[in-house]
Amino acid sequence: MSVTAMTLRRVMKATKTGHGGTGGTRAVIRRRRNPRPTRQPAETLPLEVRVELPVRAYDVDFQGVVNNLVYVRWLEDLRFALLGRYLPLSEQVGQGFAPILASTQIEYKSPIRFGDRVVGRVWATEAKHVRCAVRCEIWAGDRLAAAATQTGCFVDLATLRPIPLPEPLRREFRRQTAQE
Image (cartoon, rainbow, N blue to C red; front, side):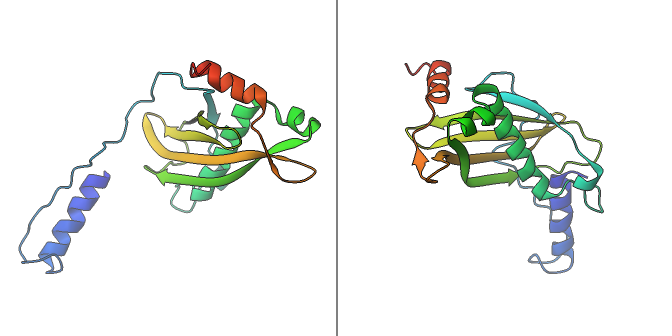
């Protein structure tokens, strides 16, 4: 059953039982301001990486829906796939720095179930002097299941103090966004 149908059903039930106003049956349909995308975008974004994300049996709850914490793990997988392509973690650690995450904001749009084909995409949205940000989307087939924004920086491993964004990442971001 779609979310709209479930909302309509709840509204109709509430109005029949007197919890929703004047009694009687009254249907209220709320339209979404921003309809959910139904196809994965074809355009390429700065430092974009796409990764197939497996849904494992232990990722789902008793209803067969992927647990919210799994999305956070997938965000980590996506970020490290991006870094692996442009600046592998082994190189970072070898040079004495590593990334840290400062914040994660995630919107759960649609449930993912065991057996769904899941693809994540991540791209850079910001590459400032010290701070950087990525946007992530998790798709189940042609449905956008979650969208997230993460911000972070890189730290010196000896002092754990923030350092300027590594030049290879900053240079590639500028090249792909034509900010030379």
